[in-house]
Image (cartoon, rainbow, N blue to C red; front, side, top):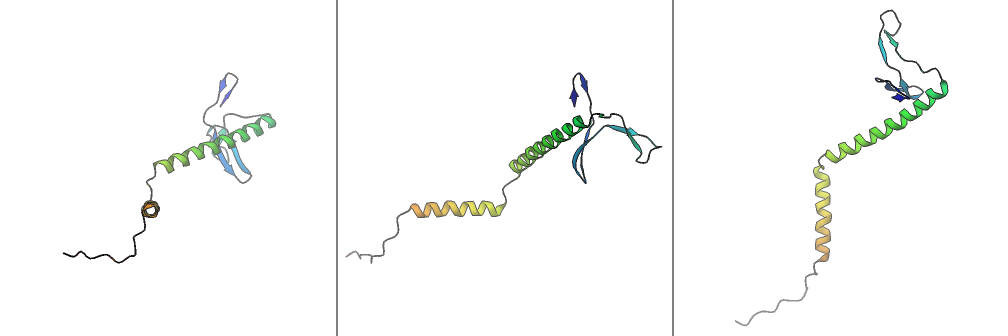
Length: 109
């Protein structure tokens, strides 16, 4: 995250009980209840809410890109391949002339 001339790394995106939020970087602190302490704090509540909203949007966009990429790389399942081939065969057969129902003439050989 870049704020003015300051860059802060290692924020975490957390999906909590009240929705997604940005968790600040932290380091181990054995004397605390959680075992970690924040190394950065956002004191302005409005800025924190704006950061949380921007984070949720960026996270959703990143997930959409990953899903699209995974689907593009995933091989088509055999059932889908067979269904696609059946549709192609139906189109091909529909474009062919119908066979005649007349009796075939016999050669007088």
